[in-house]
Image (cartoon, rainbow, N blue to C red; front, side, top):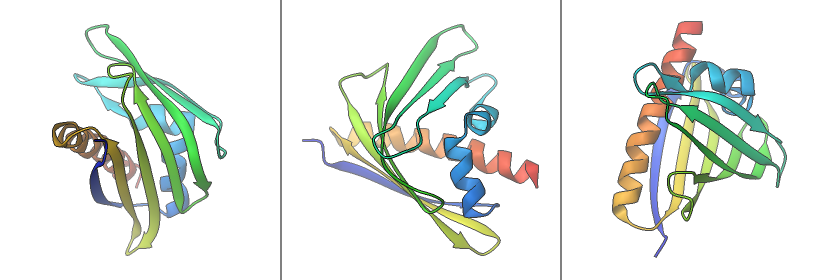
Length: 145
C-alpha cells in the first residue's frame, strides 16, 4: 500500500522567492543539483503552472544517464509547490512532493513532504536522497551569500 511518507525541514539562507526559484528555474536547478563524483543535472525543463509538466535529465561520472519527470499539482509562488515524481530507474512508482517555503530567521524554512511510497524501504531511500539534494542546495545558496 502506497501510504509511506517522509518529512524534512531545511533551513535555507535566502528569501522564499529565491528558494522557490532555485527549485523551478532551469538555470538555477542545473547550477546546484548534483555533485562531481555522484551525478549532475544536465537538463531541466518545466511548464511552471498547475498541470504543467517538468523533466530532469541526469548524468553520472561513469557516463550513465537517467531522468525523472512529473507534473505540477499546485504552483503558488513563492510559498508552495506540489509536484509528482516518476524516475526512469523506477517508472512504475510515482510519489508526490509537497514543498512549503516559509519566512524564517535569516531566510527560508523549507518544509518538504514526499508521500506515496509503496513501503518503508522506499521511503527511507528517498529520505537519504532528499537529504543529499537539499544539502547541495543549502551549500549552493550559502556560497552565493
